[in-house]
Length: 374
Image (cartoon, rainbow, N blue to C red; front, side, top):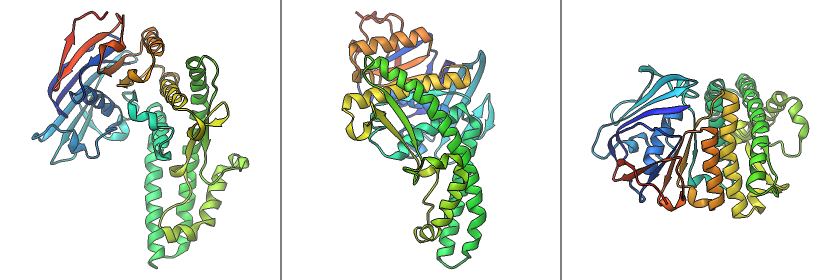
């Protein structure tokens, strides 16, 4: 997969930008708050239709403007395509694929990216919701059907929760939950099955990467944890039956709380280094290495599932790696021909790098840097 052209208008601090990347590795240098991360945000937004930073989409629009536009031309499996967004302050956003209006579920999986940002270093110690988002985004890009199942699950979950509140208020009978229990369990098993399959594949890839980064002294093991099933290994024989029974057994508690206490929306991922819980016992260095292994495993997972590497976005993470790991990473990207966009504050992070294009970013302006780095 290759980005052929990026066009941005009134997005964040960019008034207008047209960029045609020519190389595999593209490095964007500049001080903080100049627009480097904004550029990566626009590319990543084009992949999933949501920002990793903005609370409201209106925050993406440049100050005192009413509309922002992102337009990407890219090549996927040798076929040129476009994806575009029109984000407005006074109307619903528009998504266009090959100039035709479309919906978010048709977008997912069309243009794939993997983003590694400093906040990802909290992926391990952060909340379970962050790890679920990581997993769901990865699987969704490889399988639009999975994304559709997620949307259906969240819709059924919301309807069941609304029904729980009606029952609590005495507006309907508890018997009406039976249908929703069955529907929720049916769609939950689809999600769980896909997650377990993905974790199995990611675990193999990430462990191999972890070994290489740690000079073969660390084994990384990724385990999918079904909420409420701790210590019960037999549930995998019939997850659907287990879910339905859990929903029935906890109906009265759910009614009191007004929310569903079991389901994929509460599951988690556990990471072990040499069989020790990385969240509780891992050093900061081990946690950073594990996150890097997870992110690089995304590349290989999506390559295996879609026959093509996604676009890699590295936002100010080179400072987190020592010189040997930076060199190995850049060599790997060039060797595998993975188009990559990297932001950094200093050119010193790329000594002797000749197989890359360098750009200066200042106040929302991007200019090619012809200077050869030492």
